[in-house]
Image 1 (cartoon, rainbow, N blue to C red):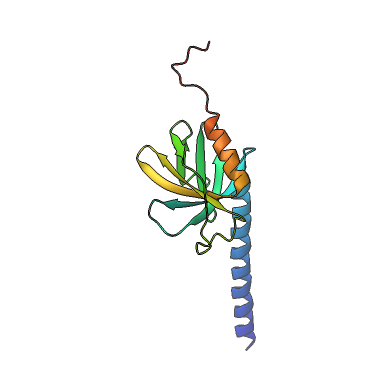
Image 2: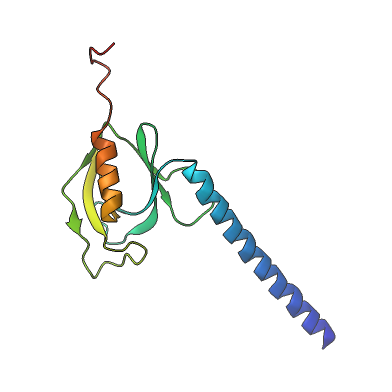
Length: 145
């Protein structure tokens, strides 16, 4: 019987250790993703998909990057140059679509060249995204010197 209790203690300790290490990795990943830039909660869905994937949106130097909320990779899953990102008119998220992590969410249809997708975020994050995309510097053909 003491061997069984010892084995259970070891198993529970390992499970707690793995969960703790994962939570630490996710926390450090979020800090690494932010790196002093604006980061907001944002859900992503491909055109025609009915499931939203929760994640973070980051406004980089010349692009908008989307990272899934889970996982430990610090590379963006999707990246769109802000010069080619086209945002449609925002719409309210249907109550049947579950976006529990984003309060008062709106979604916006987007396309980057031929890729079409949807982004859902809070109204303040949408305002920041719209401002970031519209504030892109002039094209390189500009005569500003």
